[in-house]
Amino acid sequence: MSFKYIDLFAGIGGFHQAASLLSGQCVFASEINDEARKAYSLNYGFSPAGDITKINAKDIPDHDFLFAGFPCQPFSIIGNQLGFNDIRGTLFFEIARILKEKQPNMFILENVKQLTTHNNGMTLNVILDQLQKCGYKVFWSVLNALDFNLPQKRERIIIVGFLNNDIDFIFPNIKSHWDLKSILESDEDIDPKHFVSAHILQKRLSKHQSMFNPAIWHENKSGNISSYPYSCALRAGASYNYLLVNGKRRLTPREMLRLQGFSDSFKIVCSDFQTRRQAGNAVPVNIIAAVLQAMIEIKNKIKP
Ligand SMILES: C[S@@+](CC[C@H](N)C(=O)[O-])C[C@H]1O[C@@H](n2cnc3c(N)ncnc32)[C@H](O)[C@@H]1O
Image: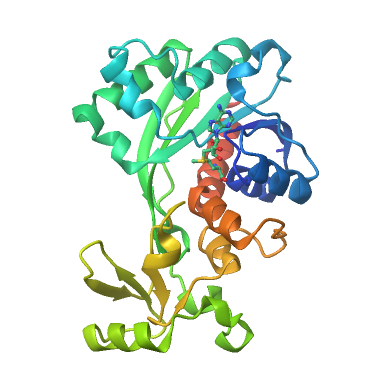
C-alpha cells in the first residue's frame, strides 16, 4: 500500500527513512532547526516548513498518516504551569490541533520512556485523553531498539492511533540479534581526531577491562565505567564524550546514524557536531518501520 504522510518535528527524518522502506510519500514536513532542515532537504529532496506553531492546519495537504517525534518540552508544562487538562502552549497541542482538523486515518507519536511515569502517569493520561477526543482509538507501548535489530539500548514510548474503532492493535516485538561489529567503521579508516589521548586511554584501562570485543564503554557522571556489546542510548548532547568504542575512540557520525538504523545512503551534509546532535535526537528507524508495517497490515485486514 502506498500512503501519504506528514512528518512533524521532522529532525533528520527517522520517520521518513522508515516510511520510504514501505513506499510512503511525504506531503508535508516541519522542522524549526535550520541545520536539520538542510540535512532533510538535501537527503530527501523535500524542504520542511519551519515552526509548526505558525502553520495553519488548513494549509497542510491531506494525508493517511501523521508522524511526530515531539520534543519532551510538554512534560514540564502540562500539569505544572497550565493544569492537567490545558495543553495549549505545548508542542503536543500542535499535534492535537492538526489531528482535529485533518483527521488522518492513523498516527504514530514517539517520545522518551520517562513520559510514562512523569507526574505519576498523569501527563501521559492527558495526552491519551486528548488523542481520544480527536476521534482516535489509541494504543501505546515502550519499545527498545535492541529488540529491533539495532545494537543500541534505547527505550521509547510509541503511541499509535486509528480513526477506525474496530481495530485492536498489537505492537510488534521482534526479538532480533544485532551485531555491533557490523555498524563500526574500521579503526584504520577513522580520522585520528576521534581517538582519545594515550593518557586518557591509560586512565580508562586502569579502571576497566571489558568482557566484550567490540564493546561500547560508557562512563557515568560519577566516573564509573561499564561496557556492553551494544551502545547505551545516544543523546543529542553528551554521547560524544561518554561513549567510547573499546574505550579508545568516540563514535563517528556515520556510526551514530547506523545505531539509529539510518541507511548509509543518508548523506552527511552538516558538521560532525551537528550530525551527532541530529543522530542523538532521531527516532530508531527499525522501530518505526516495524510499527508502521504492523499498522498497515491490520488496517488492510479490517478494510471491507
Ligand atoms: C526529538 S526531535 C525529533 C527527531 C526526528 N524524529 C528524527 O528522527 O530526526 C524533535 C525535533 O523537533 C524540532 N522542533 C522543536 N520545536 C519545533 C517547532 N516549534 N516547530 C517545528 N519543529 C520543532 C526540534 O528542532 C527537533 O529537531
